[in-house]
Length: 241
Ligand SMILES: [Zn+2]
Ligand SMILES: [Zn+2]
Image (cartoon, rainbow, N blue to C red; front, top):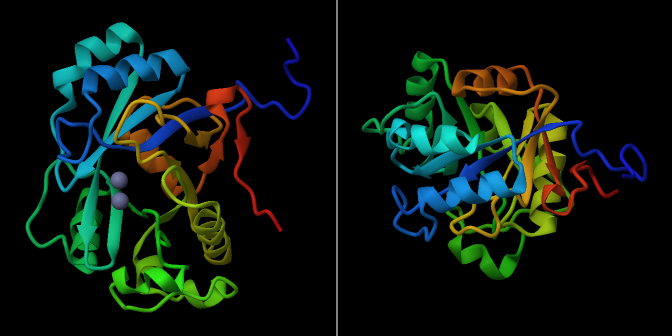
């Protein structure tokens, strides 16, 4: 009822949560793979990506329950680098030295993968938190064109413009920078527990089934960030001004 009216876009997009941690591979997560599958099925999301910190486990271990539940689980990794957290697809295991952003780029290029600047401005716009920034400098929120010159954006293929654990201001700023540079835009909940899965999602115009499909669409810049899946009103994440 009401389909097609009132700005509702449910069903128009294939939705993917591009950024999730489970307790199977991330010590800071409370989310079991079984609970992830159950929740993914319940909310009707298109696919979920398991992106553990600096490691990847073999998702064949959950292939049977995922298939039984009709849930597509894709593998990724969130690599900790000297320039922040990088979402990577195309990498099956941790490789020594990839904590350096440029080294990671070399490895990912060899494998034909993609790199995403995850939550690039988390805690970075507020001068009170500048002590936790690697460069000890708050970024000027009125100057996206200056932030766009940060090296991380020259090395990555995409920007996580919508992260479920970032503030609206941080996400909006990431979107401004991505638009300034013309980089691909993606979204991930960064869930470490069940309830936030799918709170934000990457939107695709067509369904996908594999990690390689996802890599191809990110490279082609055919992804968008969105939210609203959990209340049945999926919409693109756009600039507020
Ligand atoms: Zn992160
Ligand atoms: Zn994360």
